[in-house]
Amino acid sequence: MAGQKIDGIAVANSVKERVRAAAETLRSEGIRPCLATVLVGENPASTIYVTNKQKACFEVGIETKDHKLPDSFSQQEMNSLIDLLNKDGTVHGILVQLPLPKQLDEFATTSRISPIKDVDGLTPYNIGLLASGRAILKPCTPSGIMELFDYYKIDLSGKNIVIINRSHLVGKPLYHLMLEKNATVTTCHSKTKNLKQHCLSTDIIITAIGDRSKFTLTADMISDGAIVIDVGTSRQDGKLVGDMDYENVIKKASYATPVPGGVGPMTIAMLLKNTVTAASISKGFVPSR
Ligand SMILES: NC(=O)c1ccc[n+]([C@@H]2O[C@H](COP(=O)([O-])OP(=O)(O)OC[C@H]3O[C@@H](n4cnc5c(N)ncnc54)[C@H](OP(=O)(O)O)[C@@H]3O)[C@@H](O)[C@H]2O)c1
Image 1 (cartoon, rainbow, N blue to C red):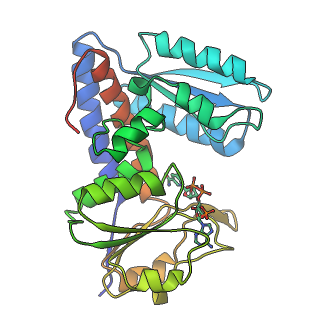
Image 2 (cartoon, rainbow, N blue to C red; image 1 turned 135 degrees about the horizontal axis):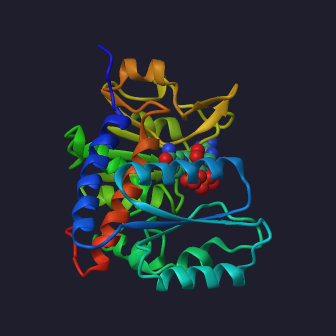
């Protein structure tokens, strides 16, 4: 029997409903939740991502302040902009779209964002809280994946999990979040030996490579009834694809996420959630983790 599709669009919609209600409550208390977006240059993919995030904000009643900057924007100008946004009481969340042009240091830029406006959860302060199991603003893609497990009532306690990715955006934060849920987590990457063996001997696989010329997760690489979450995105013949051969993997898995319609919508939904959380923090409210 084929496994169940994990429907990221449906789960994202349920998160958005909660965010819409929270934004309305905040507005009734005189706070208009607002996300400042910062886009440097004209990278087509980044431009689409920022437009989609702004559109999603509008749909749930979050205002946006758009900062589109030239490709030549300097580090000094970026620092001044972040400082201004940190001080601006009408801005609750700051999103700097990555990647940045070469002259800008991504770590220096994200580190400068005030931790209470850090809706991507990428500042060293929030990463430290995450590693201590105390983060409130968590990176959007990993927390979106955790939301999928919650929604489908998949208990991670005692499960073996393989994450194929060790980036700051995906693999490292996810490792901490899953460890908090009492899973046994193995992080794999490009230097891992016997990747197939790791995949075959685990309950859950999270794959986030994003290059089908290097790696495709096929049905012969998973155990019967495994759960597979596909974070990777790349283009094949102009079509958006993930890391896995979804059509065949779903026949053997118990659950799997499609691309598109899996993790992607969750990333945006969690950004919206973080923005209303940041707006709540601005009025002194400390949300539960
Ligand atoms: N859907 C969403 O919302 C969403 C959000 C974030 C990211 N993504 C997608 O997720 C993917 C990863 O993003 P990222 O920012 O984390 O990228 P990244 O920093 O390039 O990370 C890619 C990871 O894949 C590993 N890798 C590469 N080739 C491999 C191989 N042959 N075998 C095993 N591991 C291999 C790399 O290992 P090394 O560390 O050894 O190089 C690295 O850890 C991209 O496709 C991105 O578009 C999607």
